[in-house]
Length: 77
Image (cartoon, rainbow, N blue to C red; front, side, top):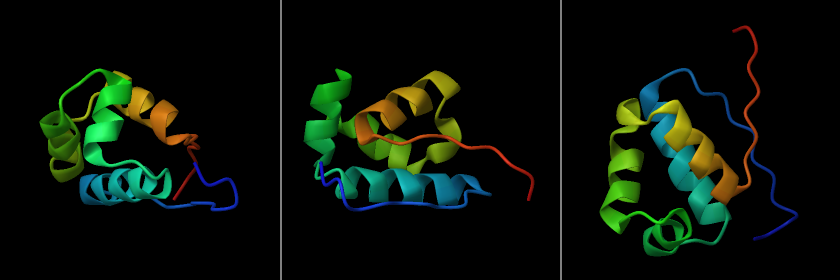
């Protein structure tokens, strides 16, 4: 994982979440298959989460964030 790259994104829609998940995976230097291996899921599951982020559960989101080395901050719009 590249330590000097930072990512700070505002997520207000499900589409934003999908874009952020895909970007975070890329910044982490992981292919969908590599991310899937780390999460013990299929590559198609990773693809599904990126393309259909409205279906991501809180538990799934937290697992993805752990693998992509992300933190979640909540604030007012």
